[in-house]
Length: 271
Image (cartoon, rainbow, N blue to C red; front, side, top):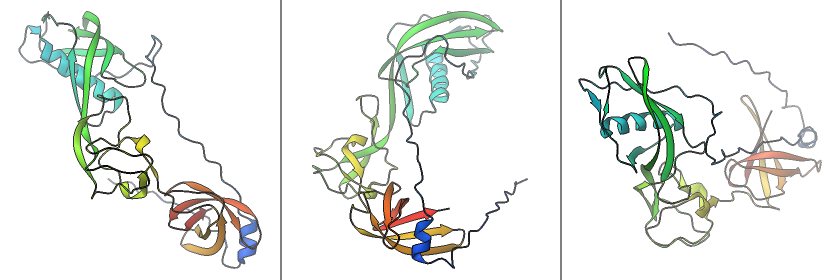
């Protein structure tokens, strides 16, 4: 049975205000930047994670492929990994005899807080029949394969890296210490922040949002409240790409306020 969410919006009466009066009531809006998690190794006081339960059928011992498969499932769930995770142990795994091959599980006790790298240490234990049969602290080699954007030719600073000069390819994103641009990213709102050679994966440091409004430009200010939209003119006090916030000065009242860039030379204020 589908739930229906009733949204009640208190409409602000804007239609009777002049552009000057409207500008005088606009005020800056504070936005807090998102923070990236620190890439440090978890300590013994890390928050517990819900283990993934993996059942082995008809076996009297656990071989490496069983443990690797269980560990991959656990780490994919822990980190919400998008892509294909591939693990291998750096130390040989000895088959582990268990009394109840029909019911066992692997639980990760300790893993890197900031996510996996190409080589990581992971602590885990294995339970069978409700009892712990062993625990391990092992180094694992990790790969995460997913489609990302690649340059098809040299890309110069200031170019727009659209689909005509970039193509998606499957790539191990842990093979280099960079944050790569997923292939489902719309490149049309970005420009090259630096030159990239041919057949290179695009990282987030290679691109930046393309300015849709520039400092000192006259911009259209759209004031939205429910179904009511009112437009006026303002002067942008900075550069801004799609979705970014810029300061704008009302031409008539000289009041300054914050607005969101939504298109070329167009910003929006919402109440």
